[in-house]
Image (cartoon, rainbow, N blue to C red; front, top):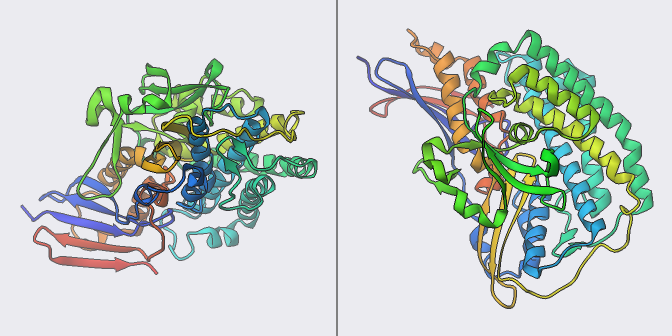
Length: 486
C-alpha cells in the first residue's frame, strides 16, 4: 500500500479573500476528505472595542468592499435597538431599497464575473482566459450586460448614500438623507434594462442546466442539510428584519420546520460555533442537533427554500421552475447560481413597488434618542446569507464587546462537504501524478467553493491576491509535484 498524499490548491481563485484547499488521499490513492482552509485573519471584533456604537455602521462597512451595505444596514439596525427607537417608515423603506440594490450588484458580480466563465468557457479551458476578460472575448454581449447590471445596483446605492462603496448613510435611528425625486426617477429609468439583463442570464443558465450541466447538479454539493434565514409574514421571501419580517426559520431538507419566528436576540440559544485548528473560519451549527447533524446552509438557496413564495409575479414563476428542477427543498448547491438570478429578479420587482410608494421620498428619515439598552443583536440577509451583529455597550454607548456571525462562516461546513464530494467523484486512483493534477478537476473543486460565493474578508477580514499554487505531498511531507497559475 502506498503512502498517503495531500494535494493543495493554494490559493483558491475567483473568490473574495485568501484561502486554499487541501485534498487528503488515503494509502490507496482514494480521496479521504477535502478541507477549505481560510488562512488570513484581521479580527474586526476586537479593535471595535472602545468605539462609540454610533460609529459601528461606518467601521464594519469597511470590513469588505464587496458587501459593505450588508454590514452598514445590520449595524444600523443593531444601533436602533440600543436606542430603543422605531425608525421612521420612510427610513425603513429606504434601507430596504439599498439592500435590494446590494443583493443585485453582488449577485451580478458573482454570476456574471466570477462563475459564468466556468459554464461558458468550459472547466478545462485555459485558466489565463477563464475569467471576465475571456468571457468578454467569447460572449461580449452577455459579459457587458452583467457589468451594466452590477453598475445599476451600485448606482442605486450611490443615489441613496452618496457613494457606491462605504456609504456612511444608514445610522442608528434611520438614515442620514432622504431620496430625492430626481434620484428616484433615475433609478426607475434603469429598471427596464436591468430586467432584460437578468432574464437573459436566466435563459442562458437554464439552457446550460438542460443540456450541459446535468452532472454538476448531483456532484457539486448535493446533500441533505438544514437551511436557515429570515422569512416574511405570510411565508414570503425576506431580506431585512423590519415590519414585514416574522423572524428566523430553520428547516431540514425534507421540508420540516425545526424552528420558526425565532428572534435574533435568541440566536445564542439555537446557534453555536465550532472551531478547527486548520482554519480561521468557524463552523456554526444548529445547537439542538449538535455539530454534525446541525450543519446548515444560508444564502440565496436557503432563502428560496425557506419561503413559500416571493410575492412578485416574475420571480415567483422562476421559483416554481427551480422547484421543478430541484424539488420543493433544493439540495443541490450548484443551484445557488440559479437562486442568485431569481433573487435579482425579485429585487428589481420589489424596487418597482418601493419606488411607487408615495412615502419613499419623505423627508422624515431619522429618529433620535439616547442609549436606552446596553446590549442588542441585529440581523439582516446579506447577499451570501444571514448576518448577525451583537453589541454590548456601556452607559456612554462605548462598545465593550462585539460578535459578528457572517454568512460565509455559516456555510463553512457545507463548503467542506461540497469540495469533498467533488474530489471523491472526479479524483480516482491514477497511475501517473499528472492525472492527479488535471486542470479541469482542480477548477471543478474550486468551483464548488464558488457556488457559495464566499466573502472571506467578511468572515476573517482578509485582503489581497496571489496566484494559484497546487502542491502534491507524500505522507512524509516530501514535495512530489508542484504546479502554479499566473
